[in-house]
Length: 161
Image (cartoon, rainbow, N blue to C red; front, top):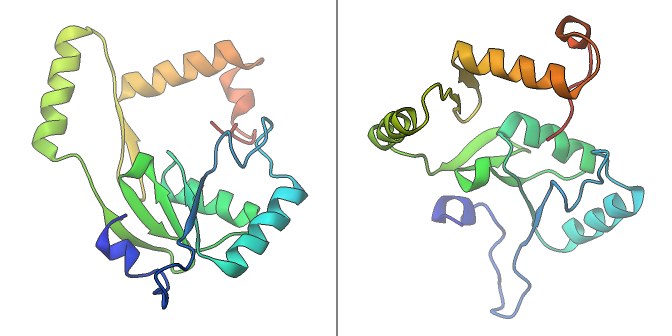
């Protein structure tokens, strides 16, 4: 954890005190249907009453905060596969460890050279974007996975990944 994020955690007055507990969300706290059991919610509440509970996810902050609220936890969330630390209670970015723009551009060029037709989406700390080809590919994949036309899915609740 970065010094910026660690500074937000309560300071230990004794060297043998319990440190923060961190838990992955997807595949750990969430059941296969994307929900959290009442039992898990109660246990997490008890844990967070005693020590800081930090959630960890590949998801971006907006989605991670929604899940944290559903789980009944607020505070620090390590998001975007460790690139961001977000405080869901304060709704603020605490720390970020982003890929430098030149490195990201070089990676995109290398992938495009190796995989013709590759397309990309990207995330910033609180927003995301994609190339038109990515959007089209996503629509085709969802159409193949989910029954019905893309337009029928417009009002559907998005599946959690």
